[in-house]
Length: 157
Image (tube, rainbow, N blue to C red; front, top):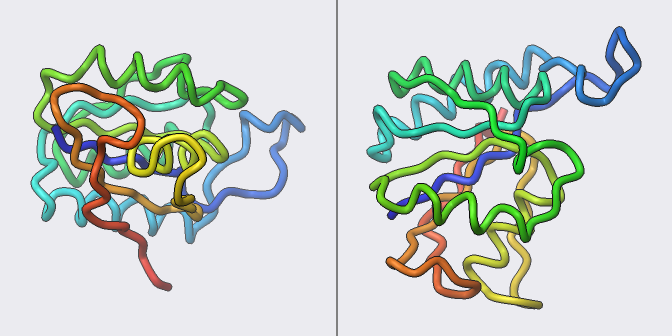
């Protein structure tokens, strides 16, 4: 399985409601999300299952990148703000029959997930900036340290 671990695009510092979960993407974040859709399509992720946090910036990122890969995002609680990384491994295992899966969420769990899958506990830290996707190749058994980091995708400007 190939897994794309996506950190949402660049977001506004504040929201109209004052709630963190309601922060919207900036224009740069929107460009990042559209570009990620194109880049993921080029990486063979067309039509892939896309799971997203329910926060506004993650959903917007997922919706924009889904236009590029001809898919629709599904909102899932384990990717929500403040969720621990240990809840993400079972989420991925639930969908392991998918040849390709995209998860869209927040830091620190997205960077922690990439690091955990590639390097195991206490291993090399994969740092995902906003608007970045880490493509990880996973064997049949999803376990810490068993993944291989294929590529990091990020729009430079």
